[in-house]
Amino acid sequence: MTKGSTEELVDSLLVELRRGTLVLTVLSQLEHPEYGYSLVQKLEEKDAAIEPGTLYPLLRRLEKQNLLVSQWDTSDSRPRKYYKLSKEGKEVYERLKMEWLNLSKKLEVLMGGENDGSD
Amino acid sequence: MMDLIERYIQAVTERLPDGTRDDVARELRANIEDMLPDEAGEEDVREVLEKLGSPSALANEYRQSKRYLIGPAMYDAYIDVLKIVLCIAPVALAFISLAGAVLEPSGGSYVDYAAAFIGGAVQGVLHSFLWVTLVFAILERAGMDEGNLSFNKKEWSVDDLPSAVQSPMGRIDRVGEVASIIFIVGFVLVISLMPELFGWWEQTDGSWQVFPVFDLARLEAYVPAIVLLAIIGFCLSVYKIVAGRWTVPLAVANTLFNLAFVILACLAITDSGLWNQEFISHMEGVFEISAGTLEAIMEAGRTAAVVIAILLGVLDSIMGFLKSKDVRLRDLPDKVLGLMGAER
Image 1 (cartoon, each protein chain N blue to C red):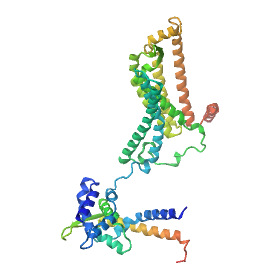
Image 2: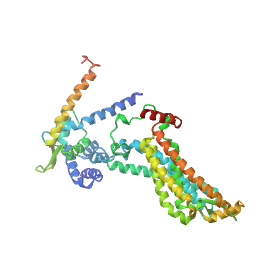
Image 3: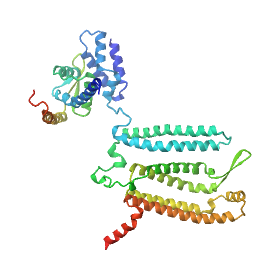
Image 4: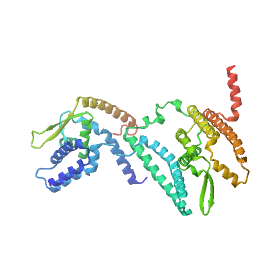
């Protein structure tokens, strides 16, 4: 396999890996209401940036799945749509979080053999 | 500058369903304005819009509708069905088209016939792709997935594995089934649309004259039964190809079909009104035999045909059961003796 195609493969696998964590990432930041761009910035600050073009549609989708509730705030000169976790969303987030912690523990054990004690 | 943003929003929302358009537009506009620095210039707008990506990609993210015609769950079934249809439809359409060209009253050259044949085959390929794809795309959209397909309704269990010894006996002869489908389709088309094709063809003064075997008016009474039987036979063959192996229910269905076929065949054979008197007397003229001789021959032929039809039907039915149990015909006596021994 040439070097270029290895890079491509790694890239596409990384995209898949990250896609699985998108929902968890978003749910984890929405205990308090955020609007689209404020969430983009918040994630950037925490070094977990999601492309705006992915995030904005994702928020709507999660709302449609009843995990988020939204509200237009028109008190400011610029109207903004705020999202936060619904009751169901909180439950789902807690369960996903447990699963994730489990999963990462298991993976640590699985991959521990290779870099055991090296870092 | 605002113009660019509005054009972008328009390009995204025009791809969305009516109900969500306004709200998405409003939210997107707010988000874009949030992303712009104060006192933004055109360069800033361009940068933000390019960060959001192409409108159609963004609209796809919003829509989340299926972005494929046939998904992975349906793909295998789609390819299987497409293969079968591609085996059958081009051949059938080629022959129909050829028959149409031959029957053309103005006549035609062999080049015309060849062109009609090839044209029919090409049409068959195109139609196969079109209709199979259309049907599967609709099934896909109707929320059908592999679990709902009638061929594998039940949840898979180990019992569904083929028997340990994969003897070639129980395997369905796919080529034979495809041939029988082609025959069924061709026969039904000819008998229902151009029954006069079955007959004695004679060339007089450069044009063809046909003496049909059947009494065409009488034949019409049989057509509904023939078509119905053909549809059942067609479905049975397709099912055999998909199933791949003989099973007891399949052997039962095969027997019922054979029974219906033999009854219809015997009715037709013994119905003297079905055979064209003109054809018989003309044949006697052609072969220079005295009137009445052919009638007698045909009488004997009818009895023989009835016997053969019944024998073939019985044999084919029995073979179905034997194949479903992986039993060879020549092993049958031992098997039966074994069973009788077990009973004692």
